[in-house]
Image 1: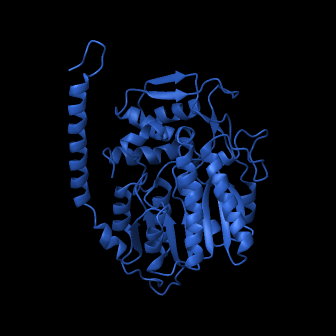
Image 2 (image 1 turned 90 degrees about the vertical axis):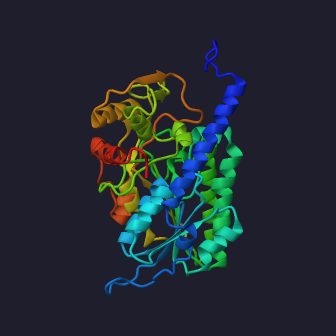
Image 3 (image 1 turned 60 degrees about the vertical axis):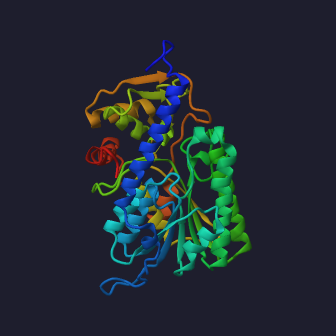
Amino acid sequence: MVSSSGRIPDRVGFVALIFAAILYLCSGSRRGLSYASMRQLEDVQLSLAGANGAPFPGHILVTGGAGFIGSHATLRLLEDGYAVTIVDNYSRGNRGAVEALRKLAPKNKLRVVDGDLGVQKDLERAFGKHKVDAVIHFAAIAYVGESVAQPLAYYRNVTVNTVGLLEAMRRHDVRKLVYSSTCATYGNPDELPITEQTPTVPINPYGKSKLYAEDAIRDFAVANKDFDAAILRYFNVFGSDPRGRLGEYPRPELRAMGRISGACFDAALGNIPELVVMGTDFPTRDGTCVRDYVHVTDLVDAHLAVLGHVANPPLLYNVGTGKGVTVREFVDACKRVTGVDVTVREQRESRPGDYAEVYADVGKIRDELGWEARYVDLEESLGHAWAWRIANRAGY
């Protein structure tokens, strides 16, 4: 029932809200029955030995391993023979990704702790059972607009939790860290492309919280000469596993803040009526913002490349393709890949905290580590993500 103003009367709306909540909780319970017990996954006795006579590369703690990037990184680590412990509180991650990883993991090579980095006892559970050789720290909330509206949440989740993680690493004598940072630390640069020497002038709390976390890592390294680290500032991540084993599927309540590729796919699948492009008066070639879109597989490759080269002082690398793409160009490519002429509504006003143009100079990581992006064809990369969404319309 809809009133003449188009609003649901309060009483009916309240009943509908309660009914929807019950359905959500019930459906969540049914989904949960299909997953391996979280307790069983935490109690796994990891095998800290190489397979088939191969040397054992190590045991890696992956924070945020249920997330889009973290799950792809975990899969690659497992493929390379590592043992992996994931710690994730699923505030942004996906239990379905963990279930997919469980099915793909070699026996006794994956352990999962349902825990929060902001809770010390959860950190103790993550570190306490098996000796950890290195940490790859992905866990963070990461939406620019949300950070403007909820800045303290970002300083707590990103900066404070990184400090807590460093303290836990010190307690457990773990001396190697790869940190997942962001190009948002640069803000609106005066010159392009962005190098590692570009001044850091973040313009939103997300970028600031990441930069403060970087500073904490650097200061910790100064005080602890046996601690080695690397910081990767990467640009706009998209795509999915080229073999279709993992993808990106944020929960519905997070999609409005998510990546433009996900929004385009949702529009192509009819999940939303239109794709909204925010910001059309930037000083760029077509008025929309310019971003450097890097495939998640390439990003994972960069993490593996730097893992064996952490140092003190911590290394710093940009990770991108070196090519800027406008949002309009990205949307046009998405239409071609999906074959759907989605309805696009453009609004002049941009998201709070957005910057006009960023793309990377990746010469440093290429020259020092031999890394460069392989998936540089935008439509090919979008095709990987679209294929997974088509095969998994309801998610994991």
